[in-house]
Length: 414
Image 1 (spheres, rainbow, N blue to C red):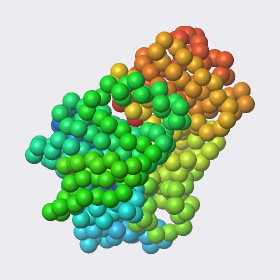
Image 2 (cartoon, one colour):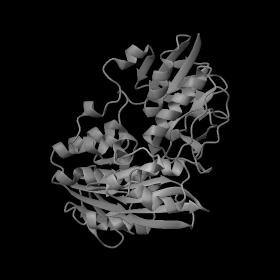
Image 3 (cartoon, rainbow, N blue to C red):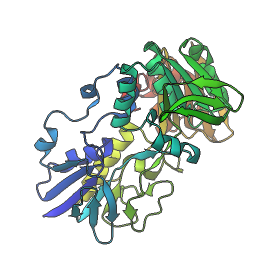
Image 4 (tube, one colour):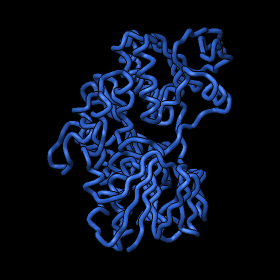
């Protein structure tokens, strides 16, 4: 019986496990560094704020792992995976042998060097990435914390700031760059969120500034001093400065600085070793190599990898990068490739869209506005629309053959 190891318990790993569960000729083991079932990571900010319960963000149903007939080992981090020896050393001391493997370990928080000592030495500093991080932050709030300093105005930082707007806390968002959502939106597009953010009475945004020093006492950060002289008193510091692919445990022929490179079957350079989800570096629909994931990508990649592990010849459909941030009543979104100098802007009702173009083909979008008016833009990238079609698309022309309301359901693919 062929032995399959799935490393990681997120969207990609769970999709692969479900696909392989029907293959009786395979013995499947799934290991996870976290001691819990799979969950929705993009809902962690709502868990912190008390808007979601822990059970509400869980992905598998009760006893679903048992029903799949796989061996599930939670809390067993892979310390070293040797592709050549086909073995994995776990943090529990156990060594697992396998014939084929899927690496679906996602991403780790990227923490700047000057913040690493703070994270390890101060009890009220958290890098929000895992369920345990969210539960720790929720506990701080339950104990009466009312002043939060968020370092990083990317997607996670903005989602957490938004989730906390009704918790009676004061949030100071600190960003070294000139604007928010810098890796997701061009600066002038992101600035269109200013009217919405101005209504957030709990939120103060400090951009274009560095942290000069931290005031600590009793093993906790009590204040953050900025380079412009501003002092931010705090009860909690949250680090949300980005992520990097979780590949440090992999030993083998893997160029992994930007993630594990895979072909269209999700196989790495090492035959029999597959990868999927946030850990991969893949070719997008526009022909670029990129990292960054959506839920739909991770699930699709995990399923494709599993089918090929089982002996099929399955190729992955075109993938695109993107992100969504909901800032009620609008969403901010990026779809596809937004690099390049050619673009066209469209305003429909209260919504704004910028289409990035390669010649006469749309390769990506940036979006600010009402989810109901942003329908269909994902397949517009996949179908390589012409820019002159976009205004009609935003107005909801039915003859363009697009699935409605893809973006209004941002939670389904964010």
